[in-house]
Image 1: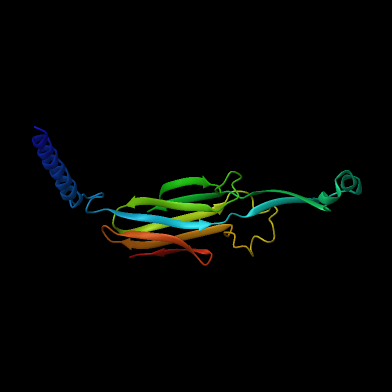
Image 2 (image 1 turned 60 degrees about the vertical axis):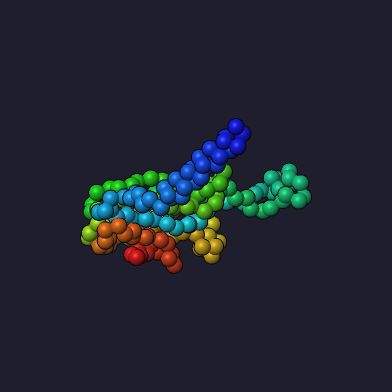
Length: 178
């Protein structure tokens, strides 16, 4: 009786393994035959906005010797507005902040938007939300911070089942087709 149970379990295990292997070869379409996409993929370091002031002699004297700095700065990282329009119709509008608890890490833009294949007018803007007059840390440009205003406005022909990739190349938005 035990040998019969083992044979049945062995046959059932073999059928389950065959079924799993056969199902992995099935082709499932995730998008329709006439689908195309616009993919945004870049990483950008936000600008650092700082307000600095010189401390008075009295304020410096109140601090321990190892904490005496003549200039005190308070700052935060800038936020950016991402807006996408396809054929003049707004597709996305949202504000992006840097990663991390204090939003001082890089901004990751990883989005995909379905579009109809064919010739499409694509307008993408990535603009700093804070006014440009806000004080900025002068070392940001040297450390590769994202420019304050990035824009891409072009007509692109996206073939069926293709993906148009928009990325940040040398401080500007660039579009690439397969």
